[in-house]
Length: 111
Image 1: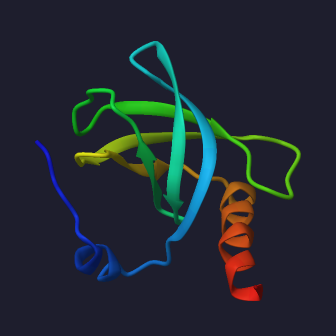
Image 2 (image 1 turned 180 degrees about the vertical axis):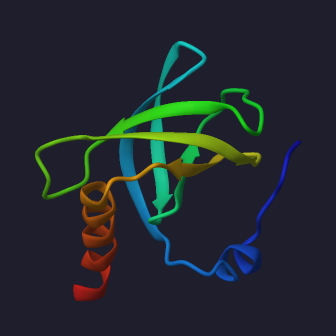
Image 3 (image 1 turned 90 degrees about the horizontal axis):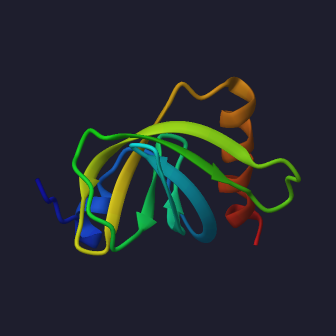
């Protein structure tokens, strides 16, 4: 199933998203991929990719946020598929992981 979200639909989401360009390494069904995260929130993120996946597939992600030395290692699943990539829903965030993401989201407000 492919879902396309335009800017109006994305802006209707109830949680704050931040545009970014972060390297991400992720594993789906035992295969490792490397692409870019283009936006992130405390609930999920968008990965730009040309790979073919299905909604509902589980994945593990590893990426670094600016100002943190340790990479985040997160579990997620594919929530939707667009023509430029995949929408990913984060699962089982620890309070520390959530705090790191929230801190990164707030950096934009300070600039």
